[in-house]
Amino acid sequence: MQRVIEAKLRRVLHRLSSMKDVEQAQAFITKTGLFNDAPLIAELIASTSMSPWGCLAYAQSLFEETTMDDPFVCNNMIRAYTRSVFPIRALHIYNRMQKLDLGSDNFTYNFALRACARALKWFEEDAVKSCGFEIFRKGAEIHCRLLKLGFDRDSYVQNALVFAYSQCGHVGLARHVFDEMTERSVASWNIMISAYDQISDFESADYLFALMPQKNVVSWNTLLSRNIRLRKIEAAKGLFREMPERDAVSWNSMIAGYVQVKDYDGALNLFREMQVSKAEATEVTLITVLGACAETGALEIGRKIHESLREKSYKIEGYLGNALVDMYAKCGKLNSAWEVFNELKMRPVSCWNAMIVGLAVHGRSEVALELFAAMENRLDEVRPNRVTFIGVLIACSHKGLVEEGRRYFERMIQHYNIKPDKKHFGCMVDLLSRWGFLYEAYQMIKTVSRETSSVMWRTLLGACMIHRNVDLAEKCFQQLAELEPLKDADYVLLSNIYAEAERWDDVERLRNEMVSSGVVKMLGYSHIEN
Image (cartoon, rainbow, N blue to C red; front, side, top):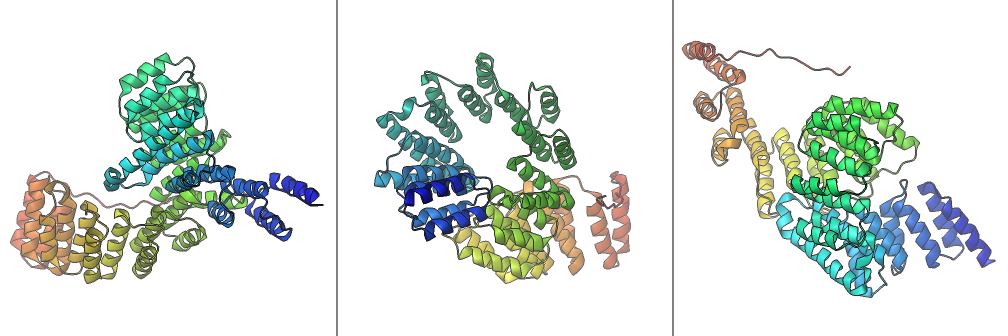
């Protein structure tokens, strides 16, 4: 009887197509007392972690309910986390496997090496120096272990080594592994060429490209990505049209290229062309297009994408969840952003940032700061970064929380070791000048490098008009004149400040100066989406 039930369950597990099916299958397994049947649970976790409709957080909860000592299950979890927004967790599972000697195989090392490569992306630029070496060291440790165990001749592991070393910035080591390979697949050549492209060694990349015995669509995609990275959009468009074949990555790269040069309409038009051509949009496509929607305010396209995902019962997590939250927040649909945010089981820092900044920009300052407080209560899961504090300072500025803003600014520096950049200083200048602390704002701008301070001087100049401080306005105007050619808005602002103070001679003098300098007052305009 037991064998009949197990056979039936295996047939059910092979037909899983939604999280509802998974929950029903888990309930049946528990009810029949088979939850300790390792092969059954392994299949259930594999489906939940790797399927497009799956949920990695749910798979993790299932994983934690087991003894977590099945190599097949561990491999699946490492692979799933490697593809997720939390690749570092893949390395945690790998470390546990080694500690308990669970019998790692070539798949384990392949996935773990790729996790090393992906983990680097998720460290902030100011943390790469401290954390990047640790990731590289972990990759080197894995390399030593697989050499000892004899997995170094596996082609997939060799490709993963080339990829990991190149992503960690050690292209010389990647090339050494590549040269030692007895058999190189097309994928091996593509990975090595891409590695040279990333460090702008185009001569080496082109040399290998010419030597390739066989090329595929990935090879051409590498050239396409190079042109896009170099912002050679016309060259990229020409190559895209002439490619022998195109896949989803080709379309994704070209759409991303338009987004990179801020041609968001071009990105959306190409997405429509992709739909007409019947090429299937991937998650990467949708993430890129949602980014374009966020920047242009094309809410309707973004909403249709979201509705389509819901109709397909597609599990929204990771990068896609981030993109939806960001799109709704930037388009001002905060309720929809909240809805998606609350549905996400796993929220990386970028997701929290999108929600906090969205709330702050649209005047929901108190809610933004409450969300930041909730984030600080979960430091074991997520840690605020420089973008988080931009959202926090914007929230303080809009609400007039000057003292709180000062405290958050100091907390960012002292507690989180984040060095403020021009955006943080800009937020503080806006906060201080908006609420009347003009001289404190003036002193803060004096500490910023001159090359990045023009926007701040204009912010303070505008505040001088509101608070009727003519002397400080003249100083701001003079600072701007020393930094760059003055704009029509600069003349108009100071002229209006003089007019408010009834200094009509100065108004006349400034207008004459504007005319003699050839500065033309630009007409205002609005943009409305059709």
